[in-house]
Length: 469
Image 1 (tube, one colour):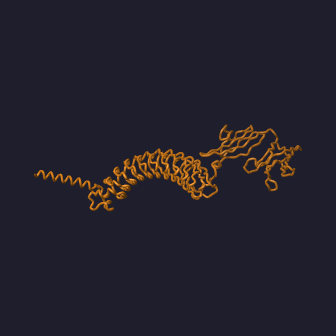
Image 2: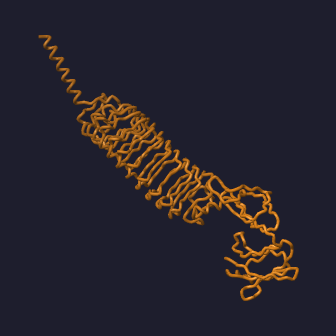
Image 3: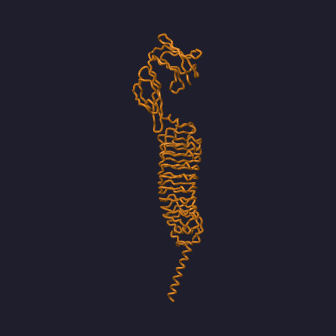
């Protein structure tokens, strides 16, 4: 009889324990339980248990910033749709039972891994500032916001997240990132990674792009017409064209290797632009080269142009007048550029001090890291005693600006210039500097003009030439 009572009592204790276990959920972390007490889901004192019935219907739980080390017990919150356990001391988290979750905020913890495979309704995941080395979001097809910056991720696959609107994955070790399936993406931040190629051609809704501090050598944003902010500083870009980005109001492309920058997007007056520390960038294409750019860096930059072709003007180049002589011509020294027999720095190099004994065009070519510039002049070797030019172009470009007869043997006494009606326009004594196409202070029109050259022998030579404007 005694044995039966003992047996019955033991069975009673076991059943009581099972019932108690089913009615309560273990909460081993006192800080976690204190939060539950504070929000009315448990009662003091802290005993490591909370009534399961108090928590299994809760849909939103915020335990952020409470110094929680262990979130054991969260598995009993089976109805949770939003969990915020950010800014705690968590080193692990099991949310496999919380299959109704739509929002999960676990940032600023020390979590190395998390299994999200059963959270197929998840829309928002903010897991930044942890120590995650892997993040699998393949089953989260409803995800619209993924913020996972400042982890240890070396890869990230978002190909199944076709509804993604926000992707922030800065400060990881990601080398490749394919966002071609994320066609609804509007905010994309992938700065401070190891990315060498980035294709955003499918992201037509993109308004904010931050890809700074990577290894990009090219970046094409021509189709991203909604783009209003672009951070791409600290890369290796050599060219950047944002002329199609009419909504762009903030651009930072500093600390690259830019040779070409086109910001001519009709919105310069509203924009803040920083292209500092692009040491070889000698000009920038803008809406209005003479406009004010007070919100732009570097301050004091003035080489603004309306098209890229004008950038060559900022590469220094020497310019020489064409030469007509009846002897050898010796090439003078140059400050900017080198001599070549063909355009573009091609052909045979020529050097200062070298004698030219045949008529030819000689090119002066200079190049910087980013651009080139070129001038040319002709050397005409003649056996005549004098040379009479057939035309001149008085437009102050430094080439053929005056009509001047070359007198090699001092055989000319004077020169008279007439218009078509025989009116004297200019009288030139010997060894004059020539005629600039002006009569009585007025520029004469494009036309033919006549000359009468009187030689010391008394002979007169007549003919005509063209003034071209």
